[in-house]
Length: 136
Image (cartoon, rainbow, N blue to C red; front, side, top):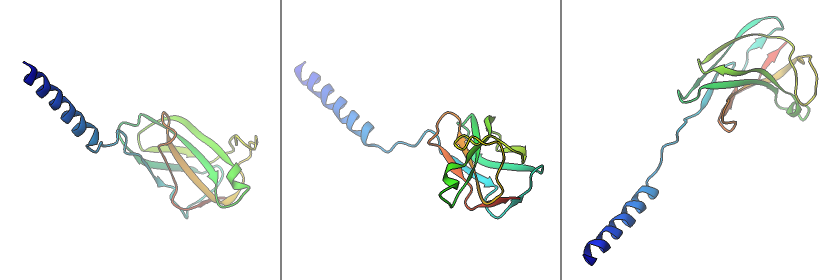
């Protein structure tokens, strides 16, 4: 009886070692911004498509615009839409919006914009345009 008990304990320990040492696959793979991805030129009032690919586990995304490449731009980060279903596409009319940090409503003209698409439930899962685009 004592041998069986020791054998069971050894098997449990070995099973635990294998379980905790085996590589785990992440639950959510991530997000990739497809468009705009750099070089585009948008105008206020223009209807544009923001597109991305994302893991099917992501239910909804938040879409933001930011100005990159300058110290002032680090402060401009504005919401385009929140809680958008993860369909991979969002149609938006380029318009003024609220910039959280600056507290302004006017969408500044710039050649240094990026779009950020973020998992609505996990802010550490996101992607941004690979290169800047402009709003004129």
